[in-house]
Amino acid sequence: GVSRKRFLSLVGLSAAGLTVGSCGREVDQRPSGTTANSLSTEAESVEERVSRIIAVYDSQGIHRTGTEGDQACARWLAEEVDGLGITSSLEGLPFRKIEVIECSVDIAGRRIEGVPLFNAPPTTRDGIAGQLRTSADGTSKLGFMPVSPRGGAALGRYRSSTSQAGVIAVTGGEQFGLPPGLALINAQGYDTPSGPSTIHVGSESLPALQEAAASGTEVRLINYFVKRETEVYNTTATVDGSNPSLPPLIIMTPRSGWWNCASERGGGIAVWLEMMRGLKLAQPARSVHFVA
Image (cartoon, rainbow, N blue to C red; front, side, top):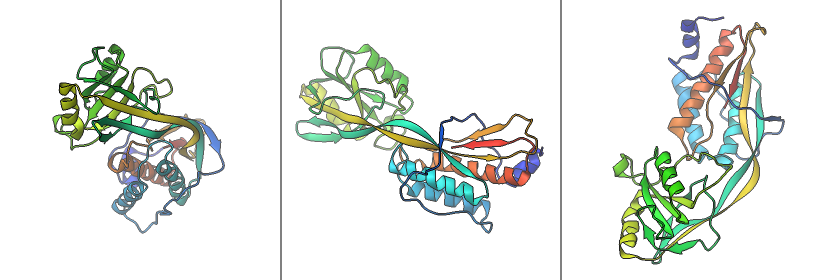
């Protein structure tokens, strides 16, 4: 084995999270798409490596599962692992990706762009037209409510208690200590969409929605999307231990995210790579499996 002090000195970091990762089908082909070839060099300091990793991750754009940025990230991260002298693998996982065709709210000719709630069903191409209410009562076809990024449970209660055909979640903004814009709710039950069709809109839309509800103006909600079969990837690697009889350790970090997610996901990936580098140098007794 290796002492905690020795390991942390090799990794160059003070803490990291350990948990169990997911598994899937291992594939030989890496996903196509542009990628930045930025293999690490021994001349880099820890600070330089971490800064570079986060910057490259950020440059890939949106990392939502199954997007081009997500696929490019899988391939790039595998190259980073290979650059450490450790063999990477890509695990292919089947995935039904949402492809948005139209997601918007129309109020008297004013179009407000939205993003689907990913565990709600779509509308037809024509959407749902009707009056808007600020509560879940069934006297209107459409309702809306402000929702914080951690407000998934409250939104779920609203959606399960209403007979409305469509719901608008107004996210972000000063009332939640956030800048104006979108703050999407995680999609529990992605594979089993239920309830009324629901979309997110940014906080700057709230006054227009409140005015439409007060005046009885007809509103049209369109949340039209399809699901396309695709394949997504976990990036994996193993640092072999000297004693195969010992149970292995698994170190996991999430790799995808709603937007660029450079500070959240990029930082985790940088730590993941530094731990891999440190463990390779430490030559641990037990094998360590890595999954992103």
